Image 1: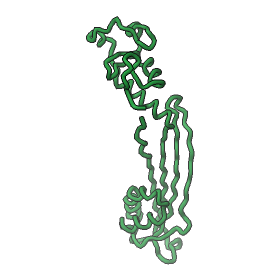
Image 2: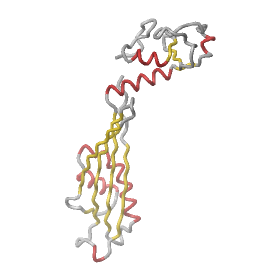
Image 3: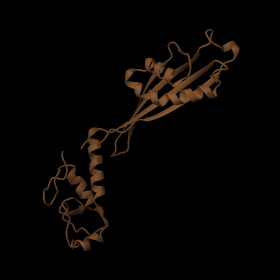
Image 4: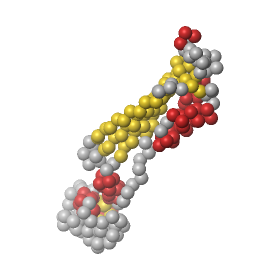
Length: 206
């Protein structure tokens, strides 16, 4: 029942500053520094509570230079600068860095670029991920109470709570085995067992 790991949300901000002659670097290099923040948010899907962890990384030890702002030169320099596990960011950074450099006057003046990358991972615990899968399963089987008449089930009871399926406005779910239950009853049942409450057919792999 493991769901896919959500893709991280990446926010990239690039600021270019055109340097005056008194500020220009002695070797006329075009330089930039980069900071990244690993912003991890863990969400409890039941309560909605969030736990946030920020892990900043700064790369400015040499404020290194580039011979040009061609995509190839930027890509090579980023791979040398970033940790190996963050090389996947390079493709996202190259275009923004190159565009900002050109718009800031690269070729006519020395410029300094500051790049801020915020990577946000929103992760679920294994238990919460499993519950989320169950919720989707129950919701996907949802039916209207009027459909019970077509199924000749308007007098049937929910085999979990033993109350009439149509005695209240509760949401109903029809599973792959064709049996119908109160959605809330079925959800609570499936948290404990992976079989249909009525016919005991296996509904999902644990």
